[in-house]
Length: 360
Image (spheres, rainbow, N blue to C red):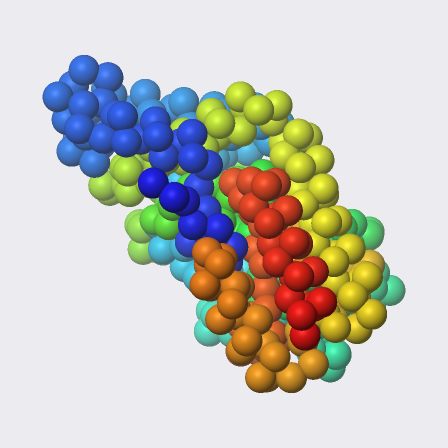
């Protein structure tokens, strides 16, 4: 079978080795005579999958012992609500840094729960950059500070943390978790939908400092309560068993190729190739993000006209490239090069971009 050259923003490409392993085990997981999606979530087989997946994530990201790892449902969009429901204290305010569509949505949901405000934003430049540290003024009595570490639509990424933050730092890492080393101890809570770097859609990873679990009030709905989920080891209700299994396989794959540091090196190499194709095109391709804020995951660029863009996307699809159309907020094109996108696929895209430029 000829594999697509998949540059979708999410759900995104999965490692071929993971798909091959899943195919092999699809109808008979470890001699059970059942596929993983047929196993009871109370069975020893699935409990072993759940425990191993958490252990792998802890090892790969060096998660300290005073953090809980949760596997939840609802994607990052549900976390937009769960974070303020659990962490926003009565009479306090939460600060949000605006770097794109997803941070806007996170703030909007938080404001339905309590007091939350944008304390820095790059919206005036159509989110071409990450706000500078000097713009971020966090009130010391804030419940938390929320950032989105990578912005899929606009192609920007935090490369350093906000300085002198004396409140819990909450991060939506949906589109760059596992792509580079992270000092988990710098965060109060990290959340990430799996469908970009961790696995298929359906499971959301939450990494939360145990001290913050004390803020989860008993009167919260059980399904939306971090402490309830932690106490039940993410098994309060039927979890997305197949998605957790795929998450385990992706983490095993990441471990087998050398871990997060190795993935970071590959991601930098892939991104450098694409940005070189853009920067050396004499303006034929124009990057959306400012250079110091460029994402290693989502490379956004435009061409000089809608007609030329349409021609580029049509020829790209005819050549086997999938998912290169940019979001309507930016237009143009977007190449998402998450962990599982092979280097050779990026090399083929760069060749196509150079050929198309020469012909037009």
